[in-house]
Amino acid sequence: MSTVTPPPAPTPEGPKPLNPDEEAVVRSLTRVIYALPRAIDAEMVREQRLPLIEYLVLMHLSEAPDRQLRMSELATACEMSLSGMSRAVQKLEGQGYVERARCADDARGWNAVLTDAGFARLSDAWPSHLAAVRRHFLDHLAGLDLKKVAAALENVAT
Image (cartoon, rainbow, N blue to C red; front, side):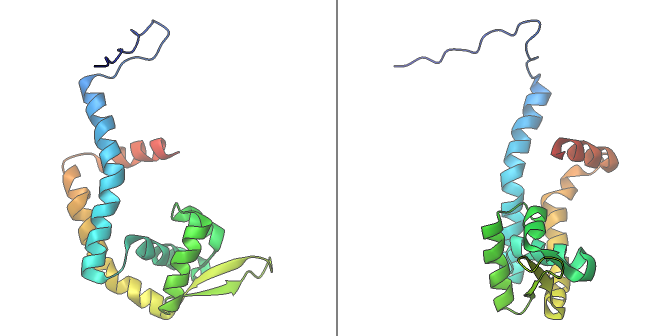
């Protein structure tokens, strides 16, 4: 039977151990990072037959100037690899929701462009996405100062 060696005791100049509340936040955040997107995705697929990542592609394109972004910018906005984004855009392109167009300022690059059908699809899916976000996330933050929560999360993200 093997034994686990406990970590060394903190030194005055070492990191301060987490208190129970801090530990709970860190562990909960780890679960949220994985569970929240899966829960929203499952609802979006069930209710809209539109995976969350495809919804996010349509959303980011709808918010971009002229409803278009370079593929690399879209991948960054959706936190995906360029190859993963290419697959997602290809699927949406096949459904008529997105088109690819050569970049005007760089003939080697491609833009993803939201079509009118894609904008309509996004509009149809938006209520389901909003309901899922509220049910799985925002409703659990009732009573908290959301400006402070948003600022703290933004600080963590940057």
